[in-house]
Length: 399
Image (cartoon, rainbow, N blue to C red; front, side, top):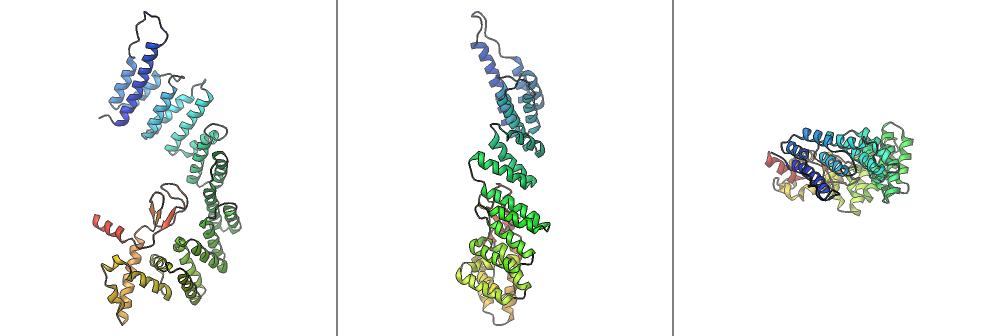
């Protein structure tokens, strides 16, 4: 049965047929000359479409219609429709057919090249798309669109230096700020350099990320990781604490590192003091500390254990399943053992549910992603602050 898009294609044929007939009917001709009949070729092409013979219709259309000033927009519309339908190979043929015309006007050639580049992009042929967009980015009326597409391609290919160059040009031509986006490009370069042990380059990239741009917490976190990896624990701790003070949502990334450094240096008492001071300054941090400890299975530190116990006692959904108040009132080791079991179960539960969610599109993931894979926005993910019981219960019900 013909689909909606088939009828759209058929509509293009009918419009072109009607246009041709109207030109013959109302154009210049002798008074006694009869109006031209509807071209049988259009009806033949229409028959192909309605019978879902798209390949035959395409071949018939390309042979029947010359690419000239009267039909070129129909070609563009047909190619765009094929691309939206996912039939990219047919869209490519349409636009290549336009480009092959030797006397094509420069503006029409740019339009055809831009359409073909989008076809290649939709087909995943990034190298071909990149070449065409690069050409269009130099002086065509599609400069801004081409540079936007190039940024997207370079992000997918992780060509961060090229992305910086394209983004910088786009800022000038597009009249909008891409400072946050470019800062993340530099952070990507910093992380690549750090993973290769080139910490001098990594520090320079972080400096470029934060030079004259809005301060991104990723840059601070990357600096802290570099200090940690180079055994500059004093600087690392200073940066991790500052990150939590300025952006509490990053406690999920910073607190495990803080605990690891203090424990490794056998300064648990100093860790206790620092955490108590942090919670006294901001009591809401207690539940965030607890959730982070549960997710990362951090225990054996009294102030953290107290936060976790308070969190569990005040979690209404958990109270529906476990009588924690009675367990807490136990006078022997039985209460502590029961709490440990519940806490262990919560850690497994938290590990099985998404920990981060994009504030723009709602995409969820287990780890922090600086660029959302769904909406492609930067630094939009935020961590959960509580164990997602409702998600697990819903999953259990649907099984």
